[in-house]
Length: 96
Image (cartoon, rainbow, N blue to C red; front, side, top):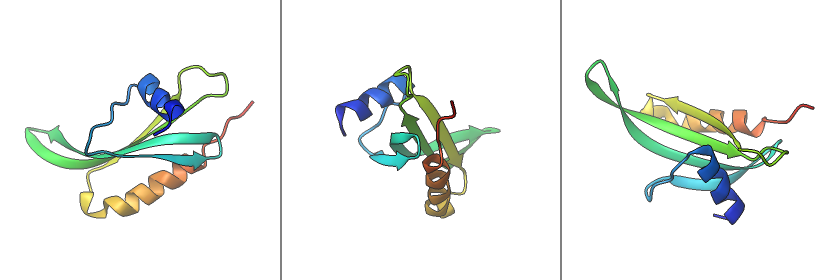
């Protein structure tokens, strides 16, 4: 991971673990750092798995990056949802 990508994650408050899938992806707004992880969420006293994908995208002004965060409890279909999340993130652009 490049220094700029690492700074984007840090500024966005995203901490990537050793088991996380971390990569740089292209968006219309520029490169974004993507972190994909499986988590366990509590719901009404039950522990349920969920897939979480976060994208940290640097802003043109150089201020703190924008953080896009998506999740699904349908872990059996996680790959399909991640494709959808990637498409949404890839369409991100800046409006002046």
